[in-house]
Length: 79
Image (cartoon, rainbow, N blue to C red; front, side, top):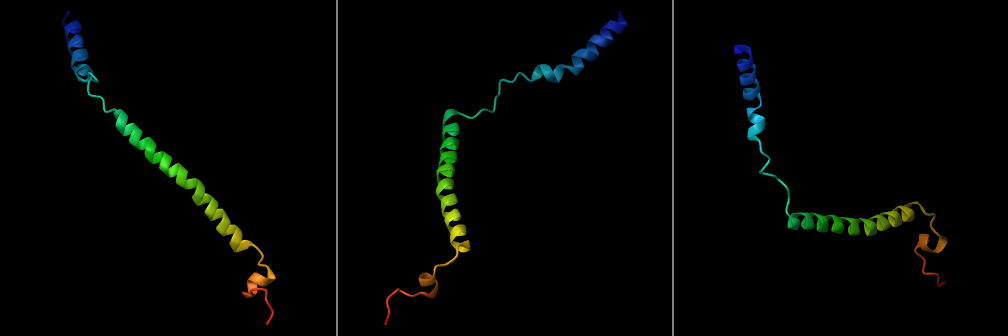
C-alpha cells in the first residue's frame, strides 16, 4: 500500500506541469495579420516577374553581338 501511494504521488508530481498547461492561450494570428502577410507576398511576387524580365534583357544585351551601325555610334547617314 505504501509503495502504491508513493508511486501514485510520483506520477502526479511528474504530470503536474502537463496538467497545468491547458493550451487555452494560443498564439495564432488573426485574420487581418494573415491578410497583411498575404498582401505582402503578392506585392513581392508581382514585382519579381518584371524584375526577372529586365534582368534577362540586361544579360541578353551584355552578351549579344553588336551590329555594325550601333557599335560605332553611327546614325547611318553619310556626310
